Amino acid sequence: MAGFRLDNSISWGDIGMGIGLLITGVLAFGDLSTRVSVTEDRLSQIGAGTTAMHAEFERHEAQEREDREAIRAELRAELRDINAKLDRLIEREQRK
Image (cartoon, rainbow, N blue to C red; front, side, top):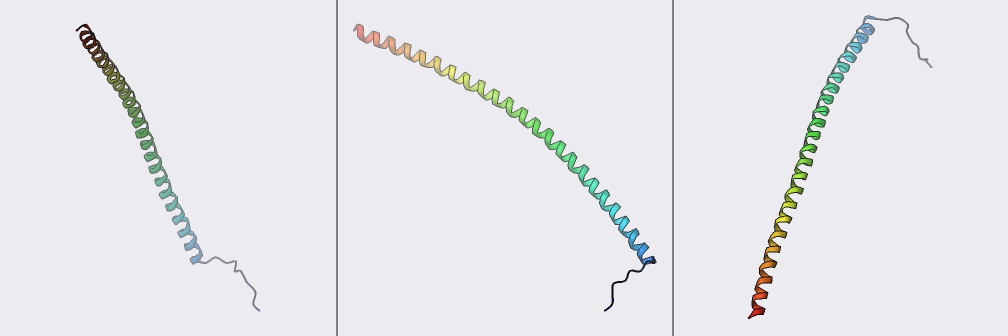
């Protein structure tokens, strides 16, 4: 039965393979760094956009609340006017 034997010599193929692995690792790390920086830029842009949209939403919500209160005040005033007119009509009918 033959045992596993390790050769201690280094060939040109081993050197080429080592250099190839080193170059591949550097290129992959460079590409990964580029992708990470692009992703960070996109995330910061999305964060800024989200913050702007949140501020716009709050402004819109406050404006909507003010408009709703204005409509309620207008309706109350109109109902008071209608009630006053009805009271006058009732008084006029009672005098007859």
